[in-house]
Image 1 (cartoon, rainbow, N blue to C red):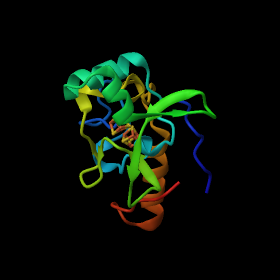
Image 2 (image 1 turned 180 degrees about the vertical axis):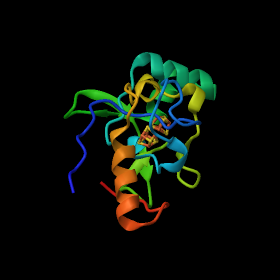
Image 3 (image 1 turned 135 degrees about the vertical axis):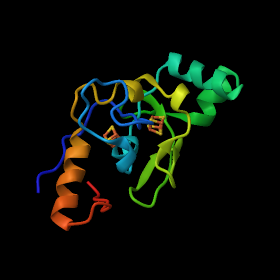
Amino acid sequence: MSRLPKPRVIPIHAESPGIGHKGAKYDCHKCPAYCCSYPLIEINKRDIARLAKHFGLTYKQAETRFTKYDKGEKSRALRHQKDRHFNSICMFLNTRTRQCTIYDARPGVCRDYPDVPHCGYWEFLKFERVQQDDPKFIATT
Ligand code: SF4
Ligand code: SF4
C-alpha cells in the first residue's frame, strides 16, 4: 500500500467536517487526528501570543510550557504527549475524543490544513477501512 507524503505544515482537527473549506471531502469527526500526530507542528510568535492569552499566561510562560525548539529544523513547535494510536501526538489533542482542546486558539498551521478540499490522511483511512471491512479501523501510517 502506498504511503502518505509527509506534509510540510501541520494540520487541523476540525470540530466539524472540513470546517473552513468549502466542498471539503473529509470528515475529521471520524478520524483519529493523523494531522495532529505530525512531529513538527510549527508555531510562530503570533500563535504563542494567542495561546498565552487563551490560558492567561505571559508569552514566556506559554512558550516554555507549550513549545520546544527543534535544533535540526531550526523552528519552534508544539510539544507532544504519548498516544495509544501514534507514537506521540500534539499535547492539545484530547486523546479520548480525538478533538482539539484549544480549537479557538489553535495555531495558524492547524487552521490552514489541509488547504485543499481533500485530506490525504482521510483518503488513506477510508481506503484502509474498506480493506479491513471495518468502519472504525484505525490504520497507522
Ligand atoms: S487528518 Fe484530515 S481528516 Fe483527519 S483530522 Fe486531520 S484534517 Fe481531519
Ligand atoms: S493545536 Fe489542536 S489542531 Fe493543532 S495539532 Fe494540536 S490538537 Fe491538532
